[in-house]
Structure formats: structure tokens, C-alpha cells
Image 1: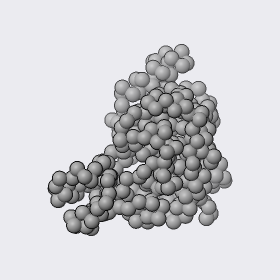
Image 2: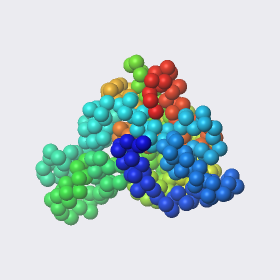
Image 3: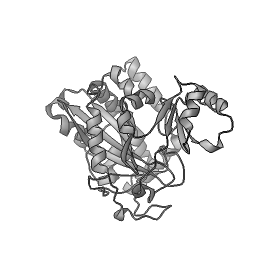
Image 4: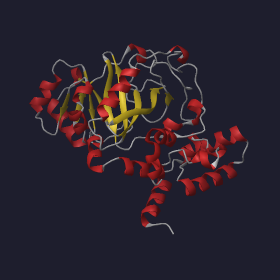
Length: 343
């Protein structure tokens, strides 16, 4: 019989279902496999009960075509919670969960100025804004691009009112704008595109085990969790995977700018990997970290760290056509220790 905790988890997962998106995933699987939609729904439900596989996990992992052993290598919501519980000390994870604390600890990796509205006056805020064109106000615990406002300094009519509004909204972190590199601007210049780098720590060593760059398809000015393209990068800056969207469509060119992905080369990828590995050594108590990095005109800069980072795009089967998931990447680094984790 399910425990109260498990029952609560199940109820929350059902409540959070985006039924339109799930329906679209089922339609794509039906088109690709010829399996009936009823069969897919039943198989999806069975995998949810056995592996904790949500409909997005099921789709991105191509679970309908995997063996039992292959499925065990994929992160699912339930298994990932357990992995994070084993790897990360909650008392230190707050460093990643609060953007203000994060910015203070990793200030030298940000390469931009910021102000904390928790402990500054309106006059302090005015001094911070002097000489700036654009800044971004952020919720301290915002996720997926939510709770971010772009502020054009020259258009501020009433600074005290803006200050009060940001405080009321919980947008207590205000940062300089990141000036994105020409390499990435060529693909999409309207937003600072986010490069997810995952590092794992063991025995004094932090190592990059996975990455994925998220690129907006349109002219949205804040990176979000939908309408994006994803791909992996090698140390040389070249794309070493397919370029895909949320529905596993593969792209050869960017739909808005027309840039050919085969021609893309982004400078600073190796430096970004090294930066995240070095930064991780400051909080070894949090052994699994998903970093968000941007490519600026001055090189890679830290955007934020995540105490419970999304894993879905890291194991999207369409990226590299692999039949193993993100947990294999973790297991390969941890070695025998991985067998101790009860997932």
C-alpha cells in the first residue's frame, strides 16, 4: 500500500498534468510507432506506476521502445528526487535556491554588478542605476524564466514607485544586463540564451557530465521553458547532437534567423566547463548541480545554480539517439558508489 508521502506525490503529479501537451505527445508517439493511442496511454500509466515516469519523461526517453534495463538508466521525477536527496545536503542547497545568496558566493564568476533590494535604500538603488542602460529584476527563487522583468533605465519615471513595486513583487535582485556574444547573437539576439551544465562532485573532484544549450525560437526577451530549441555542445564549441524542440522535431536552421546549425561555433565552451567545475568546489556538500551559464562578449559568465535542476532535456533521446538516460552519466562518474543509492 502506498505511503501518505507517495500518495501525495502521485496526487500532485496528476494535478500538474498539462493535458493538451500530453495529448500531443501521444499523437507523436502514435505517428512514429503505429501503436494505438489507447495502448500508449495504458503503457504510459504502467510506466508511471512502475518507474515514476511522467508523460514528458516517457516521451523524451522514448520509453515505448526501451527494454527494462534501459529504462533503469533514465531519470524520472521519483528517481531524481531520491538521487538529489542522496547527493545534496539541504542545508547547503539553499545557496543555489536563493539567487541573492548565490550571487554573493559566486560574485567573481558573474562578471556583472548587482544590487540586493533587501538591504539597500532608494538612494542606493539610484546610485546602482547610474550609467546603466538596461537591468533585470528577478525573484529570488524564480524558475524557468518566470519572475524576471527587463528595465530600461532611461524610461524610469518614478524611481521610488519602481523600488516599492519590485519589493512587493519579491524581485529583490537587480542585475546588470549580460551583453551576449556575437556567436550566440547570430543564432538569436533577442534573449540571453541559457547553457545548462551539470557537474557532479566526488572525492575532491567536480566533473561536467552533461550539457544542453537552450535557444529561443522567436523574439521573446526572456528565456522560458517552451518554444525553445535544444542541443549539446562539445569543448570546441561545435554542436555535437541534433537540434530539437519540445516535440522532437529536428532543425537544420534556426526558424527565425536562418542560421545553419552545422556552421555554428561558440567560443568559450571549454572555459564554461572549467568555470563550473571550479565553482562547484566551493560547495562540495551539494554534489549534483545544474549551472546556467551565458556566453557574454567577455566570455562565459555564471547566471545561476539550481538545487533541483530539470533533467529532461539532458536525456532527450532525439538529441543523440542514445538508448540510455541521464542516470547512466551519473553512474559512470560515481562508479561503485552509485549502487548504494536506492532509486
